Structure formats: C-alpha cells, structure tokens
Image 1: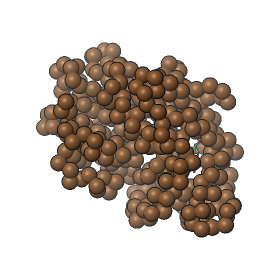
Image 2: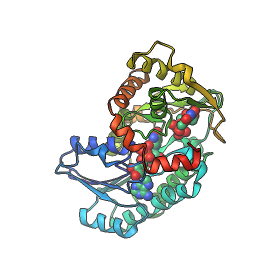
Image 3: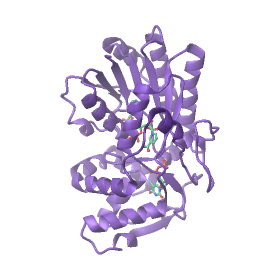
Image 4: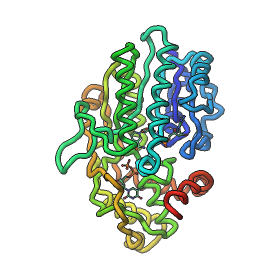
Length: 349
Ligand code: NAD
Ligand code: TYD
C-alpha cells in the first residue's frame, strides 16, 4: 500500500538511520523528513539518499503549526513517525525549559495537526518514538515491561513521559490512531559525540581524560541502532493501534565495564599497547539524580512481532569505533560551531 510518511527528527542519530532504511526498503512510500536542524541534526547524515525520488526534506520546527499543516496538506501525510526531540539528559539538567518546549509542546502541536488533518482513523497512524527512561530507575533486579508505572526522574525523561501521555490521551480522547515504543540506550554511527559511547571513542583517540560519572556502576541496556530500526519497522507495519512496545536487547552493562571494553577495542584499532587507553579513565562528579539501572523486558515485541536483536555489543562497539575513526571529517564538523559554544558555556572547556 502507498504511504506518505512524515519522519520528524530524521536528521538526528536514530532518525537518519530510519530515513535511510525506509527510503531504500520502501520505494513505494513517500518519505518526508521534517527536522529543525538543531545542533543534533545534520543533513550530511543523509547524503546517500538525498536525491532518491521518494525522499523529501523539509526544514521545520515541530512547534510550527502552520508549516506542519502545509506539509500535511501538500504531501497528503498518512503516517507519522515522531522522533524529533531534545535527547540528552545532561543538557536537560541545564535547560529543562527547552525540553518541555520541544518534547512536550512540539509533540502536542504535531498531534493537533495530525488530528485536524486526518478525517478518519482508517489507514493512518501516529507512531511515537520514546525511551525506557520514562519508567525511572531499577535496583539490581527486575526489568521494565509495558505496564511498569511511569516514574521519570530527569527533566529529559519527564518531558518524554509527558509526551507519551499526550500521545495516549489523543488516542483515548479523540480516537487518533497511535502507537508508542519505549527503547533502551542506542549506539552506532552518527550519534552526536555528547553521549557516552561516541564521547569516549573521541576522547580515547585524542588521548583526553575519559569522564566516568560517579563510581561507574550505573547500568544501561545497550541496543545497536540497526536493531532499533528493525523493531520500528516491525511495529510500524504490524503493531496494533493503541499499543505500546518495549524495545531492548538484554545487553546490560555497567558504564565502567563498557568504557573498559571500548578502551581495549580502541587500543587494537589504533595499534596501541593493550591497557594504554584505560589509563585515561577518570572518575568525575556524578550526574545529579543519576538513574542507577535501566533494563528492558522485550518479550511482547519478540512474541507478538517476532523481533529479536541481531548485533551483540562486542561486535556493535567494534563497528561503531571503526566508523568514528573512519569518519573524522564528520566528527570535526559536528563538534564545531553550535555544539562547541554550548559545551563551553555549560562545561567550561
Ligand atoms: P538526536 O538528538 O540525535 O536527534 C534529534 C533530532 O531532532 C535532530 O535531528 C534535531 O535537529 C531534531 N529536532 C530537535 N528539535 C526539533 C524541533 N523543535 N523540531 C524539529 N526537529 C527537531 O536524537 P536521537 O538520539 O536520534 O533520538 C531520536 C528519538 O528517539 C528521540 O525522541 C529520543 O527521545 C528517542 N530515543 C532515543 C534513544 C537513544 O538512545 N538515543 C533511546 C530511546 C529513544
Ligand atoms: P548517555 O549516553 O548520556 O545516555 P543516558 O543518560 O540517556 O542513559 O549516558 C549513558 C550513561 O553513561 C549514563 O549512566 C551516564 C554515563 N556517562 C558518563 O559516565 N560519562 C559521560 O561523559 C557521559 C556523557 C555519560
């Protein structure tokens, strides 16, 4: 069936992988990438698909209701996959209002436009991409399931939780056809080097200190970005309207263990003596309110839609490290300009 799919945030990390995949795998769909190109959005990520006949880019803010209305009308948008967001917890601690603006008001603006534009729920879907961080923090045992009560604890997760609630509220109140997925930490190429893995890769290469927050025992459940894209594809095509799906690969790691593993991989890739990079590990002041552990139970997605993760972190981290080493120009460009100014303002260096 033909679909006109609006992907918001398609110039960001996960969004650019999703746009690549949809443009190539579904030539019968029209893919409209709507992105404001903040510090985290980079059209260079999409150079391989920019001239594809089924791809269009629109520079726009999810808060711009008029432009969204125009885009929905002009492209007869039938489906939305909403990724546009402010996505970094540390930034949310410094500037929570920006997160409410983009993640909450932006999502509600987009929901409103979809609701006004779609005359009936038939053949439409608003698919909202969210995070496992909305569930809060786990102790040593247990997993987040789709029915775990929300307990967000950072401004970022509070803003994503709020946006999830609005998406479901539009379903229950107005009958808007929606789906939500909550995914664990992603990693892979094109991730902005403020997040743990690309930041560590870059610092190892530059022989800078590797800042591990607190005692490094916080646990994250890491998922190769390509596995997330496959899950989104399954849910988009075969998920049930009104449902939520948790996405994660049961790849839990303590931050310090992950950083040590990356150090060994980088030593090998950079031809350094094993143990050289690990000497750069530096314990720094903990993140305020640092969530102890995230871990997803993906059973529903696996049993209902047959999804399973393919890439183990050992392999995925190696691929990621090699990609960053091979794409120095990309790294230099995204770490200059707006990002650098922000970084200096907030982190002083
Ligand atoms: P990202 O920060 O790399 O990209 C965000 C994109 O959104 C950028 O291209 C940016 O330009 C765009 N954007 C920001 N504000 C906008 C606005 N007002 N209007 C239009 N576009 C705007 O983020 P990401 O890591 O790719 O995450 C994408 C989505 O997936 C987010 O909603 C995030 O909450 C969710 N998510 C991320 C992870 C993860 O590990 N990265 C895990 C689970 C869920
Ligand atoms: P991050 O990549 O920011 O993702 P999130 O906070 O959304 O999980 O951080 C992943 C983990 O790594 C988190 O526990 C915080 C920690 N961390 C560090 O120890 N040092 C760093 O420099 C960064 C950016 C994160």
